[in-house]
Image (cartoon, rainbow, N blue to C red):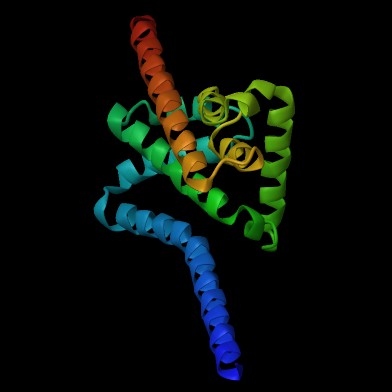
Length: 199
């Protein structure tokens, strides 16, 4: 009997240790992906091209509303497929971090405030766009598509708040970002083409 209890405690301890390792991996993996991307750009991409991607990243990430629209002028000199891939990749990594670490991230000093703001934005989006909750996966995709409605970060938070599993939330954000980026980038190129004769 005592032997069985000891084995049961050992199994539970191993399970807890395994869960902590998985949680740590989920916290670290998105940062490793971002770091590997930075190293790739640093070592393998020409500085002029890296500067263009940096401009896209800054305008896309740091604009509080409509970052996707603000990034278009910065990225019009990039090939459309590269531009779309870069924006989707950026949102995919951010969404991956949020869907895996939503509860943990709120406890990290400094980062916790940003996650709480994103959570407030997600709650606000759910109140404003009630249909997003009703339609679940499709609702999050559509919410992410419209740049002034949400975006990838808020979309990831909305998915988690309405109870979607992490994988489905991440896929909804990636699909929505891909559709939004494709539409905006090709629309931006069309506008640039139409306006070019006048300048």
